[in-house]
Length: 203
Image 1 (cartoon, rainbow, N blue to C red):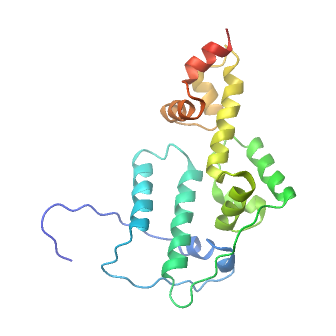
Image 2: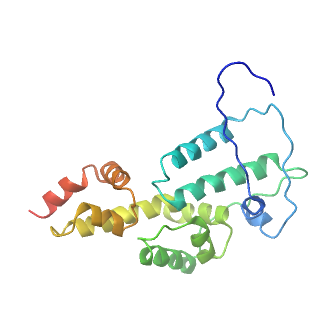
Image 3: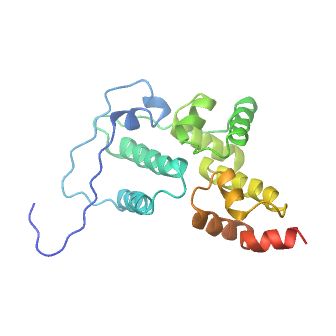
């Protein structure tokens, strides 16, 4: 390659299992191969990679679930759009069976303070990460990451209703390791800061 002037690059290495486990139809295959493409311009890939790069540069404040969701989206797109030979079929999601949905929700509730991962939740549901994500969204109206985020904020609100619970403690106990990210997320979802919410709730 030759170029003149400043250039910014993002180098990405994909583990093969990220591709083979991305879709329900490829979960038991080991022969997924991507087409070689030179001078490829794909704004969808660029958007995902830029978001991943920004998340990593900021120390991944949203946790594993957010990063894995981005990686899963990239893998599904690559496999369905650029796999060599016949592209694998993408199953149309309907919704999670009630018992599987309850199992996943119970797991989330019991482990809300942990750094949950998409693989964990998909394993609890017994399906591939992408297919689980789509079925979960169909059942709840939210992606797994959005649902976990909302549950964390609701749990934080419960804790902040007690004056002796500090804002830092409330955030950490529900899974926010970054206080700034907790404050921004709380304000975006609730409409006010954690300190103002606690002040109003404990009057």
